[in-house]
Every structure is written in structure tokens, then in C-alpha cells.
Amino acid sequence: MLRKRYAFVRVSSWLVCLFAFVVFASLASSAQSRPKAEERTVIFAVSVQYFPADSVTHKGIEPIVIIDGKSYVKPPSNDDELAKFGKSYYREGQIYRLFFGGAEAGAVSVKKWSDSDLHGCFYPGAEVEIKSPLELGGDSKALATNSTVSGRQKSSRRAPSSDEKAAILKLAQETYRQKGVPVTLLQSIKVVTLIATDLDGDGVAELIGNFKIGDSRDETPVHSLFLIAAKQSGAYQMELVWYHAGAETHYEARSFVDQLDLDGDGVDEIVTEGSYYESGDYQIYKKRKGQWLMVYKGGGGGC
Image (cartoon, rainbow, N blue to C red):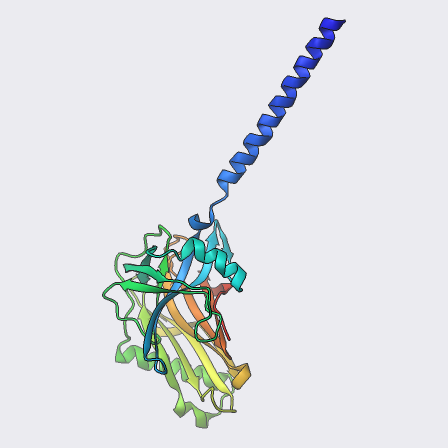
């Protein structure tokens, strides 16, 4: 009886150890399968801004989205989150690949990061050195990332021809009329940005533009318009229309940042920037079954 009891105890102890080993191995495997913070893909907006009041030119990156597997995760939105993010992604000398028009165009190197506000506003970005022949500034921006995405062999992003500009301006006028904007205002359409670029690699450029009627500093509504147009049967047709009318605190606008094939399906996703009253964010559009759909909205900062 004693031998049987001793054997039972030995078997039970062995089973307990085996169970503990299996649990530990499972937890270790699960921990290894989860990407570390610095291993996650981050997409940044790259901009060059001039602040005339301080006579300072600021070259910076700002996180648009964190890609964790197939999920789009919003970047830091407060100082506590930013402090943790900065330690992983804003180390001095950290280098990110620079993309313009869907193709690699150089690199950016982190120079300085501080968790303090920029000019009194929450700014989740860092100052960088841009190592590229690109001339960025104003409304011309680019993307940077730690991703291994290959991108296109050559950038297709360019200024539109006179015919292309006339075609999309005509579409903008038609859209404004459809939205009920008075005909008397159509002569005051301002072209904010206008870009020709190949989004799907077929050798034919799509046209991307944002327009406005009015001034956000006035009390009258600003009519903001963002368009993507593609050539079909020899003529440009609208594929995406975004429109908003609002004054002062209700002001909104959309502008093109850049493009990049984030999921490797051969069609570039489009990154846009949303501008509001004293704040901003970013959107990502993806083409599904011939339609441009917004699949992400987040990031940015504000006062």
C-alpha cells in the first residue's frame, strides 16, 4: 500500500510539473508572438513649416497611425501616451525611410524630441533632419515609416498639366453647383493643392485636389472640397467627393498628404490631413471594389 501511495505521489508531482511547463511555454510563446512597441509599423507625416513670428523653419514628423498586424491603432493623444511613444520612436539619430508619391525618396533622422508643446499646442511629433533632394514645404508633404514595404520603383507624383488642371477644376465647379453653392461664388474658387499621380500602377495618373471658396477668418461659411478623379473612356470622372461648409469653429478641410501601398495589393492607400478650428487629424482611404473608402481616422494634435 505504501509503494502504491508513493508511486501515486510521484505521478501526481510529474503531472503538476508537466502542466506548469505547458502553461509557461504557452505564455512565453504568446509573449513572443506579440510585437514589441518598436517592432510595430508607424506611418509618419513629414512636413516643413516656417514660423515667421520666430523666423524658424521646423522640419518634423508626426505619427499618423500605428499598424499592429492588420489593425490600425491611433497614435498618442495625450502627454502620458506621448512620453512612452517618444522613448521608443523618437530616439536621437533614429532613422526612418522617406516616401514621396509611393516611392522611396530618402530618409529622415530624428534630431530632437521633447514632450513639451509646440507653440502652445499639443504636438506629438519630433524635429528631424531630411536626407533627400525633395523640396518639401507648405502644402507639399511626404510620408516616413519604419516599415519594410517596398513601395513603387519611381514616384509618379507631379504637378498637373494645364489640361488636367482644367478638367478637375471643371469637376470642382460642377460639384459645388450640385452642393447648392451660389453661382456667384463659383468664380472665386481657390485651388489649394492639385496633384497628378498614379495610384494603381496602370500608367495613367489620377487627379487629386482640394479647393475652397471663402476664408476661414471670416464669419461666412467656407466651402471646402476634396476630390479624386480618374480617367475613364477618355474623360475624368470623380471617384471620391468630400465636401463641407462651415464658418469659424465649424470649419473643416481635407488635403492630400501622400500615398503608399500599405497592404501590398498593388493600389496605394491615400493619406489625407483634416484641418479644423485649432486642431487637425489624418485619414486613410483605401480603394475597395472601385470605391474609395475611409478606413482610418486619427492622430494629429491641437490647441
